[in-house]
Amino acid sequence: GLALLPRSTRVPSGPRAASAHGASLAAPAIAVEAVSESSVEEAAVFFVEAFWVSTNGGACSGGALRLSRKERRLLEAQMADDFRTRYGCSWRVGSQLRQGEGLLPSRLLLARGDAGEVIGCVGIEAALLDPIARRVLPARSA
Image 1: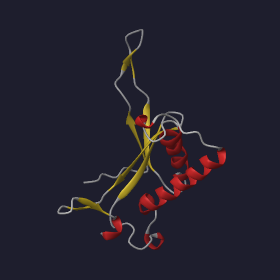
Image 2: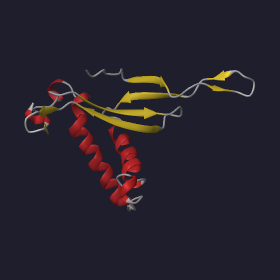
Image 3: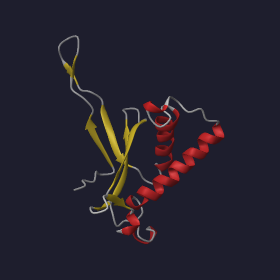
């Protein structure tokens, strides 16, 4: 099953560390929140930087991608649109839902550090599997 988090949840981010005086210090907490329309652009900016610019699609691909400011903004806008298409049903309700949307659950989550900065994101989608053809069916087939 899929457990849905409340709007924002703080979780411990690591083991406790010992100080010079032997007292234990709590590791900083990470806030995990579901992306909404108000934070989808921020998620897209983070994703473009973390995935496309810093690693160019993964460590095996040869390094960072160089983008002009205009190319970067265009890629960020495309990512935000993709996130809205994939995960928008998690924040749209009732008459805001598009036809066929919301049949299979999905969520886009952001992790924030102590200063509120985005330090990670993850998308979670339920899908249908055709066991005979061994392929994932698009959500619109649900």
